[in-house]
Amino acid sequence: MGQDRTLARGARAFGALLTAALALISLGWIARDFARAHEVIDVWWNWAGLPARAEDGVWVTSFLEPTLVLLYSIAAVTAFRSSSSAAILTCTGLLTVAVRVPGLWNLNADWMQGVPDGLLSKVLFSTIAAIVIGAVLVVTAIAGRHPTHAGFDGYGPGPYGLDGRDEPDPADGPPSGPTRSGAVAAFLLLGTCGVVLAAWEIRTWQQYGWERYAHTLTGERGIVRLLDAPTGWTLWAVVVLSLVTATAALGGAPFSRPLGLIASAPLLALGVFGMAFSLKLDFFRHLDDLGIESRLHVLTNVFEAAAGLAVLLALAKGTVRDSPAVSPSPDRHLTTS
Image (cartoon, rainbow, N blue to C red):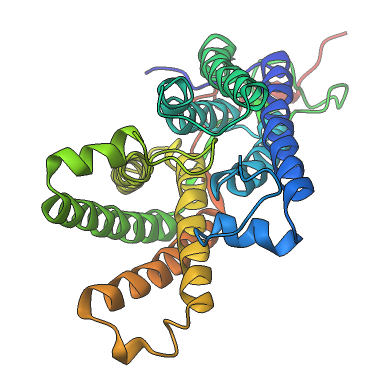
């Protein structure tokens, strides 16, 4: 039987520092937009997709920035002391690369006009830095693993014995997976969200035609905020993340718990900012006056927010699988002089 592997303490610390660095990068650009906004609330409405003016006419951040700052901050803290740190760093790194990669071709595109060269260069540099850090997080999670200590439970022949000389580190134990009820809830909620979002994207494809829809995937001439990812690209990434997590949760895979917690972040953000957009335009008050598709869009945002929050609650509590450690021996309590 294969042995569980956890992340070494040094790798956990290094990964936490890298994740904190990602949070600082996003936080720095949020501070820049706050400084350029006529009113602080304008930044919020910009994140919600409503038109608002910046002093120089350029917004850098989108709804992804506050979402990622919150995600990175939590990941940096939990990755250092969690037995699931390898999965946390891997998922965080992959999500970072996924949402930042489109910036490599969009920020270099000849259609990106009206943006000061100095600002564009800084945003491009930070995008490259985020992608590199995301990739390093994945490498760290893979290369920094070591076998789970056999004596973690205090009985086996590992470094933690019953004499109390060493305190066991919870992060060296076997990774905790979702509870049975949490796994079922994550499967149903994330699976439904993935299918619903995929259906909306297919509908948009039918309405736009492939040539126009392709721009929602590449971002060509459609990027309004410099750090934004193309709409279609982002939604398909959430679809894949949701469906993969739902499948893994149903199988009870330990990594499905951190993956599900991370997947709920963009899902919750899409719902919250979509609801803010609807509230600002009084869609909820005049819901009966909207067309059927507009009404379904509004309700989809509500479902995304509710599902994202429900997944967070369902996966908040984990369960530790039986360790493959050596079973306690009755002779373990005997000592010789």
